[in-house]
Image (tube, rainbow, N blue to C red; front, side, top):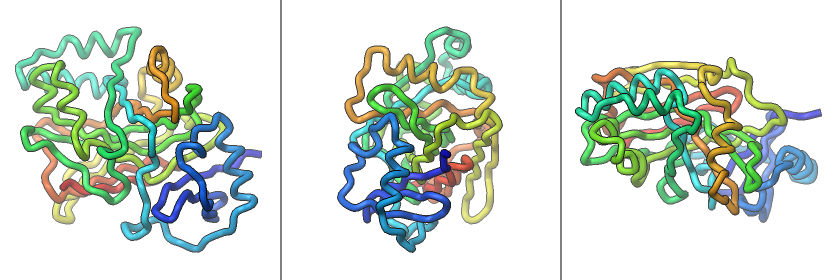
Length: 283
């Protein structure tokens, strides 16, 4: 019988949550532990021999780290209809035209791009950044896949794909600058591991707060994605190898209005149950 389990990376080490009980794994290497096609079984066996610990993992003092080590973080674009429309709007605003986004949405080949490695990724309660040379910046809440080196999806986490819309809107060739920079992504709070895919009715919810007041809220369901996660993974792994596995953001269906841009001090909370809530602040 499969149990719902979550895997946390903390300053104290790897922690498994099974049936609301936390187990600390001693002397385990993150890369070696997560890159396993049978991760769920491995977690069950590890929890059976580990000692329970009484700590809190739901605050800024918990020592939570981004659940990544040597894995590359990639991202998918224009996988939701709302994202297609948003990309077209930003491109028209920047003078770049928007027809290519419609073509990508309908094309056989998805848009995939490299996002970040460990030193550019922020964990729970950390500070994401907005570029100094950008004037229009938004977070993009995304279901993120944990994939082994063999291409198997073994878990899920919450992702924040920070995006400089003013830069991307100027020209699609500027996408790497709009998407990849220090503090450009956040993931966490854990890896949710189960033997079955998340149901289509799974909700992604994002709330943004400024000086204690909510300034944006939005939600969508992952069933609104045009492409299946397995399809995205198959394209990512066609000609790329990932010795330690990878993480793949699956696109966003929540796009703030064109008159909204992030400011320093904003709080971003992205929730996907049963994974949890990823909270970050804008530097």
